[in-house]
Image (cartoon, rainbow, N blue to C red; front, top):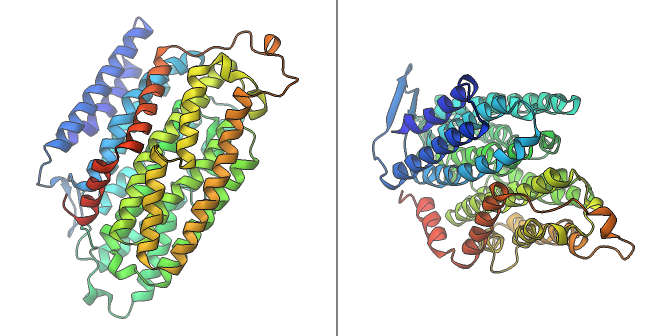
Length: 488
């Protein structure tokens, strides 16, 4: 069953490029059916969680390609499988104005399977294998339009990703040498007898591996690829910035910190302080750049850079409550950000407008899209009653509970970020609903209107979950606490 949920999207993607569909609707039905079926299989696997480890291949020593379903798998695989059917539905409408649809959906669907491979990985080697595959299947998506900007952006994305993976590989090698196993075990796998007097060397390797996986999580100074990747079609950038790529980076860092090196080895060391300071800087840097940016998708990209480091801030606190905060924001931010990106994509698809100053008065012509965008903006700001407030509260609470003085500074970074988020998100909302006095909507907005149901349904569903997570988060946060405690 585990290999089946990974292979179905990969095979489906390949078949899309091979089957000569007579009508576009036939391709849509084929893809959406298989994606929904695969998501149902994933949820069945998570609900009826097998206790055993599935080993696909054994190599020398304790190295193997193996898969298992633990608490972390349930969080990430559940998130990915929950969002992908809606993202695919949205993509059907968006891609009507793009070329080479079959190639797009081939790699788009294959990315689903590869991302599930990362979430289901039972050890560091397996996760690293799929982590590299994720780069290879997403590069064609970034360069899909084949414009000069897209080719340059895909080249930068490839170079950064491969470079980051090389640093992460160093961490893998040291875990193989100094760990008792490469399997993911809460608390870490380092063997004190093997470490001996090499503690500082291992701490340095942790920082290197953290920064390596941090490339995909858009950590400073390795994040310039993310705004540039916005040249890709919006369904791609939404997944790059909200689910598949960036969250795979954050997920890998959680695995590295809590399940490979172990927080008992790391907590209170210079390595913890170093990565926490880098993360705090990235939080403020990302939202500061977002305030300055005028291109809609690039503004949201810088917002993503900041919010990803919220997750990593929770990781670097290195306590169970910190892990709860990280998991909460990993899930909640995915829903908030994919919603805001899909709104931006709908605006660009319907109006061909790409800049904030072009959005004057459009809230009245596209009330559904801008209504959803307003909700996601308020949630990203951290307004009580919406999802963003819950995750930020958990992160701040974990910082206070940790007693780490540097973490107290992190709370200040969260507050600064909340203020700047209000500025760069609400600027768009205010322009849309309260245009300048000189604005004449009869001349500027004759053709603009909300998109069709294929775009609107995902937006409404995401909005509902933003509100549900904000008002009724108790059960899911309790589940995250159980994951952090090793119950699952």
